[in-house]
Amino acid sequence: MKPVSTALAALLTTRQFFAADLYTFTLAGGALLRYCGGDSDIVSGGNLFTAGGQTGPYFDDQKNKCTCHWKVGVEVDTLVFDVMPGAASVLGMSFLSAVRSGLFDGAELQLERAFMPSYGNTAAGTVILFVGRVAEIDAGRSLATFSVNSHLELLNQNLPRNLYQPSCINTLGDYTCTVNLAALTVSGSTAAGSSTSIILSALTQASDYFDQGVVTFISGINDGLARTVKTWTAGSPGSLALIAPFPNPPATGDAFTVYPGCDKTTGPQGCPKFDNLAHFRGFPFIPVPETAV
Image 1: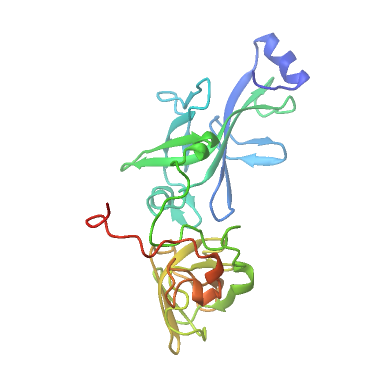
Image 2 (image 1 turned 180 degrees about the vertical axis):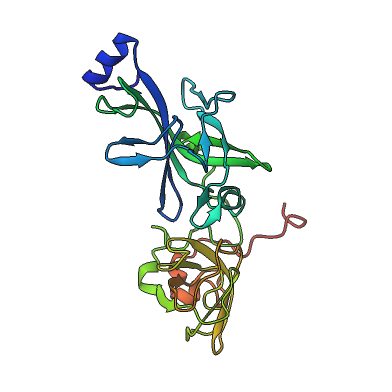
C-alpha cells in the first residue's frame, strides 16, 4: 500500500485524472535535478519539474515506460527506465557526456507520480513509487538506460564483516579509525595551468601527503564535485594528480578543500601520518597463501 492524501484518494476514485511521473536526482555533489515525464513542466511541492520541451531530456517515452520491480522480503527492488537526452545539458555538459563522465554515479533517485484533475494541478499531492540509488547506466549514441536499486542494496555485505588481511580494515575517518578528517582538511585555490586531471596549487605540504585523499571544489564550475587524489607533488606550484578527471577544467582561483589519504599500512603514509597506530586493525604478519597452513 502506498500512502496517499485524502484529496488524492478522492481524485483516484473518480477515475478521471491526468498522470505524470516526476524524477528527482540528488547527485553525489549535492546538486538536484528534477525532470517531468509529462508533456509540459509541472510544479509540485514548490519545486519545478521540467519536461523535455524542445531540448530534452525526454523521460517516460510511450514506447518504453519506466518499469518498477517490487519484491516481497528483503531482496533488492529495481527500477529501469530510458532517457532520450536530446540537446539537454547537465552542469555545462551534454547529458550523455555527463553520464559517461560519472556525474550520475551513486546518485539518489526519487520517482513520484502526480495525479491531477487538470494537467499541472498537483494540489492533491503525489505518490512516491520508488526511492533508490543509481546502480548502472547503459549509454548509447542517443539513449541512456538507467538501472536503479532500492536502498535494500545497502544490506548486501560480505560476511564475515571483518577479514584477516595485511592492510588496515578501517576506513579513514570512520568510527573505528577515529581520525578527524575535518581537522585535517586544507583549503586551497587553483593556479594557472590546472586541468581536469591535474590541479595546480600553492599548498605547502610535503610530497605524497595528499596521496589517496579527496579534493572537493567549493566554487567555480566544478562546485560540489569531488575526486580522489592519485599523487601530490610539492612545488611552486605543487600538483594534485587525480585518479579520475573532473568534468570541466577549473578556472584560476577556484577554491577547493583537500584532505590527506591513508595507504592502510604502518608505513609513513599510513597510521603514523595521523599518529593513529593505536587504532591500526591490519595484520601485517599474515603469511602469504603459498606458505600458510
